[in-house]
Image 1 (cartoon, helix red, strand yellow):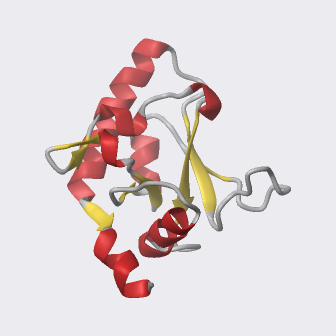
Image 2 (tube, rainbow, N blue to C red; image 1 turned 60 degrees about the vertical axis):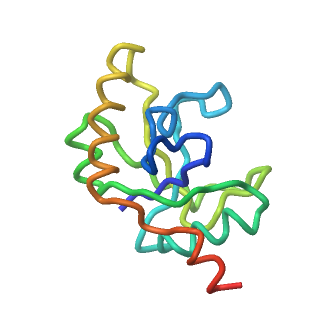
Length: 130
């Protein structure tokens, strides 16, 4: 499963909005997340918060679902170190091959799948682990 942290400002009614999967210039079409079974959603959430980053929780999709939506999950956790360092189990959703219109359709489809799985890690998980 590919797991992505959701910034609190990307929540709408307690669910990720399309901003959750929006393209930002620093992403370069590679939407960062982590991969289970290398790291659980809770472990990824805790590491994200401990790194000083904000998250309203973690959501995920299966690798098969990402493929069915027209993209793929790339495991780059074994690549040479970067600055800032990649989290353990790092992976990304690959959007580099889409036009803007195609990306919008894929994002809409993926967002439904992320919501179907529900929130995989929440604030209470961090409080219990502290």
